[in-house]
Length: 92
Image 1: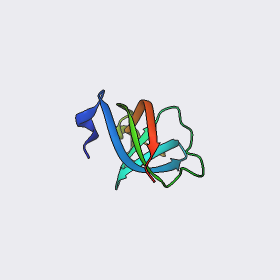
Image 2: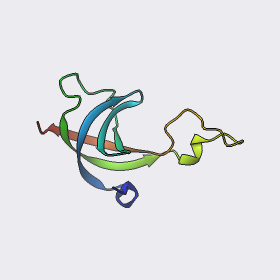
Image 3: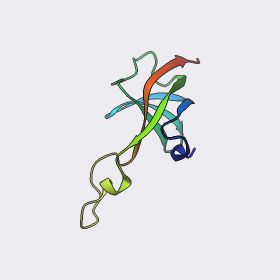
Image 4: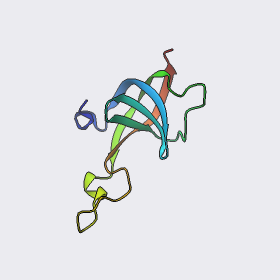
């Protein structure tokens, strides 16, 4: 999914609830993840469940943030997509 097409719009996403070291995410497909603003982690019962999440899609950071001046890869998340003011529902 090309998230760039939907920036600053209300969206509804379907995916798998997962936790990352940077917070709760929804995996919408391979390498297609969105962070849930204000949610540090999904509860143990909710993690790995299918969810429907709605909110305003925004982006922060840049993939250029991943590299040092000499081209080495830095530790970080680069460009990331975030759902603000989100609500969610477990589907299974």
